[in-house]
Length: 305
Image (tube, rainbow, N blue to C red; front, top):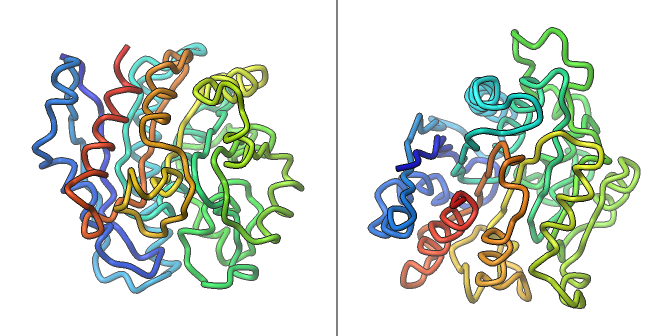
């Protein structure tokens, strides 16, 4: 049996809804664990981090929660990344996507001599700042913080781990970021990402790809020309609402659930994968547990070697 080191983030203060903080508990107690067990996989829950008394869009809560997340992914990365190979990728099951700041800052700071390539699968670009966001919702801002492009107060929430003394680039480099599936965003986000030299592969481009199931491999192959290991951050709203109704901010015409499973199944670079993050699962919006089942199938597809 292969144990998957799993971290839960029971927090939902980065958006307007509240039920996504139940996400890790629903997955931990799901009756559909047999998707995993049939492939000799099992989730090993290291910790579920909880947000207590956190008002919506609180910067102090953002800092506190992400520092806790970063500490865990930092330790996991120290223990499981050697040379240019990731031995045991972690899994993060989070409420809203703002916790991605912690997930990937911990990885980056644990690898002072290595470079992370991050694949961000999302309907949105998540690259707003406090100055540009129409809603003020923090779950639309994690990439601006990871890229060190946010305004001062927001950027101050980036976890600076005390053990990190020798990391030359403690932030994500724009050229090492590839976004997949975007179809709803504001011009200001596009400007920020273009200035950072990030790569954006939109949903429209994916629909016109003659081999869409290979696009994840294509992005990974490109990143690995300049990066040592890879991470995948999945916002479930990247998936079409017919297949994943239980999300915070659904957007029509997304990636089919079966297509994403195929991408994960056929992912060629699993030995380079340091971790998978799944966010924005709102169980109260689910229909016949469709999204819950899909999450477990996606985990199985990516972690099955």
